[in-house]
Length: 301
Image (cartoon, rainbow, N blue to C red; front, side, top):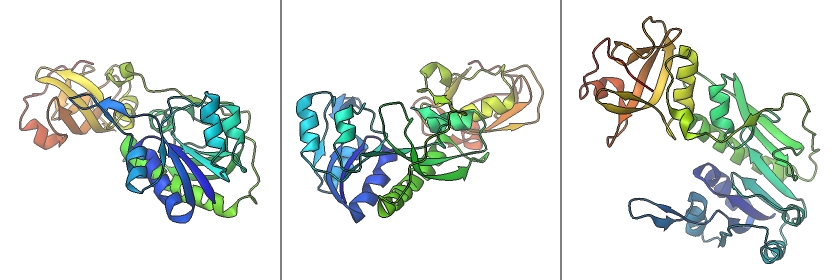
C-alpha cells in the first residue's frame, strides 16, 4: 500500500520500521525538532531521525490546520495514513484524504484509557491487562471504531518502560495484520460504557506520598519508570525511584524499615532500583553502598 506514517516518539519507531519493510511509505510526519541537551540545540524526534536514516521523506509541520499543509498531504495520494503517538490534531480534511482514511494505533483496550498516557494510567490503576487497538480515526479523542485489538497481562514486574516496549512491538505487528486484511475488516463501534481518560502525567504526580497504601505507591513508582520518574527526598539528596514492590511492613509513613524498604500508610514498599541526582540508575544494594539511610530515617515526598 501507499502509506503516510505519522508519529513522533520512540514508541512509534518499530511501527515505522515494520511498515517500511512491507509497504511504500510516501512520507513520515513528525513533530518539529525540539531544543534538547545542555546546548538546547534543536533535536529531531526519534521518528524523524529513523525515517531519515531509512531514506524516507520527512515532514515536520507545526500544525496541519493550514490549507496549504492539507493540500500537500492530500497530494501524496495515499491509500492509508497510519498514526501512532503523533501528538498533533488531524483536521477533517486530513482524516478524509487517504482512500482508506487514517488508522490510529492506541496503547490501550478502548474505550478504557483514551488520551495521552494510557500505559502509565493502566499500571497506576492496577489494571490486570491492557493492549493495543487499531482504530479508524474520527474527529473525537480516540472515539473511532476498532478494527483489531490484542491484549497483554500487566504483571507486578512491569514498569512503564517494559510495557511501553511490549505494546510498541504489538502495535507494529497488529497494524501489519490490519493492512494485510484491509479492506475486509469490519469496524466495531466502541461501547458507550467503560470509558476512561488517560490524562497526561503531571509533574506533581511524580512526587511520592508515603501516606498512601503500599500497593498504590509501588504502582506509581513502576508506572512512572523511567520517565518522569517517581521521586522522594532523603537526607542525602533526592532519589528517583525506578522499581518497587509492595511488601509487609509497619512504621510511620516514609520511614526506612531496612535497606530501601519504606513504610507506607498500609504496608511497605521495597525499592529495588533507584537513581541519585547526577548518577546512573543502580540496584538498591549498590546504591546503599554510597548513601547512608539507616533504619528510622524519614523520607519526604
